[in-house]
Amino acid sequence: MSPIELEEPELDLLLQWEDESTRHRRREAVLISTLAHVVVISALALQAKVFPAPKRTGPPKPEQHITLLFNLPARLTQKAPNQRPPSDLFVGENRPARP
Image (tube, rainbow, N blue to C red):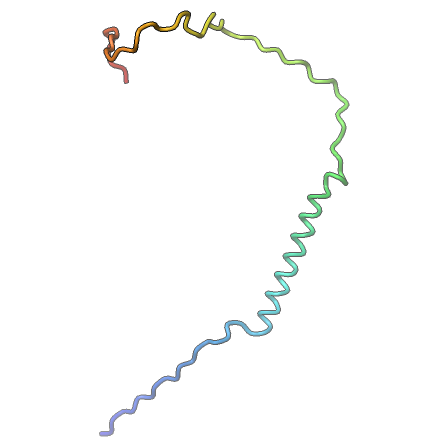
C-alpha cells in the first residue's frame, strides 16, 4: 500500500474587494445622491421666496380675556416676621398616616 499524499491547499486571499465596475457604480451613485440632496435642500430654502405665505384677509382675532374660576388668596406672604429661632420639636395634629 502506498501512503496517500495530501495536497496542501493554496492560500487564496482576497486582496481586492471590488472590481473597477463596482467602484465606478458606487462613485456614480454617491455623486447622483449628493446632487439630488443639494437640489432638494436648495428647493426647500428657496420655497419661501418663490411661494410666499398667503395674506390673511379675514376678520382680526378677538382680544382674549381671562376669567378666574376661584378667588386668589388675599395675601401670600407672612404678616410679621418670626421672632423666635426655629425649633427642632415638631408638634402636629393627630392625623392618620396618608400614603
